[in-house]
Image (cartoon, rainbow, N blue to C red; front, side, top):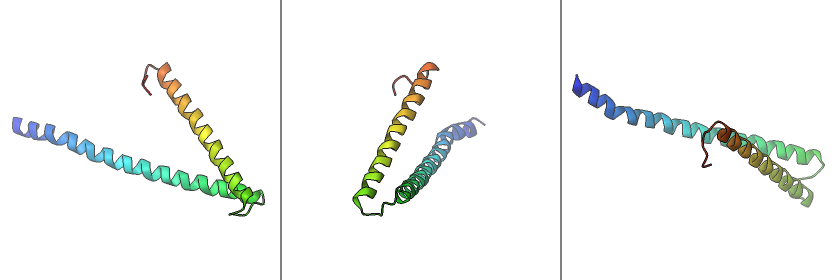
Length: 93
């Protein structure tokens, strides 16, 4: 009985680690899918402004879209960080 408990205790962290790896892969796939959607949206917005890919106007539009997304990501990160601090969570973000 004790032997079974020790084996279970040794295998439990390995089992949990396998699920952690799977969730990381899922998160990576989700990020890539979101990035693809964002790129498609940016492309559609810039084409709607009558800018053809490869033109200076298109490149400027895409840079502006990327900068806007970066600003929004910074704002979202700051909000999450502040929320964690209010709850007494992760102070070292």
